[in-house]
Length: 95
Image 1 (cartoon, helix red, strand yellow):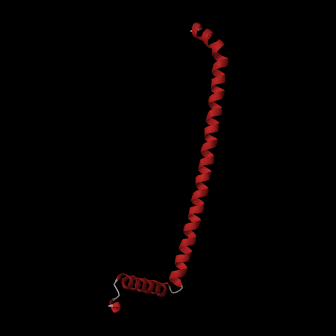
Image 2 (spheres, one colour):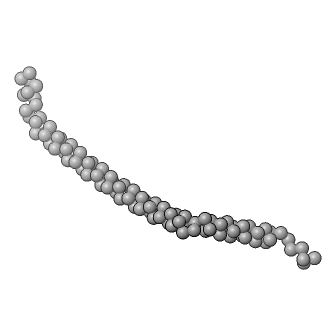
Image 3 (tube, one colour):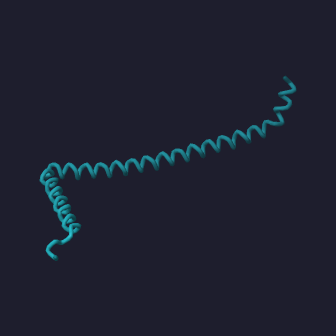
């Protein structure tokens, strides 16, 4: 037992330095993790704000005659498909 104690006494300063370096490293890692977490939280907040704005727009469309708007959009789509078909079909009046 005395042999081990005699060996540990000269090694004590080295062990303490290693412990200090290790604790500084652990503290730095914790700080980096906190920063990363804060950045993620800010990104999630920004993303949720964007989603809330989109939901507000959708609610406004639905409550402000959204059904009529949908019918108008479908009518425009139908008109575009008719125009596309006319441009693809050969013109028979040229013969």
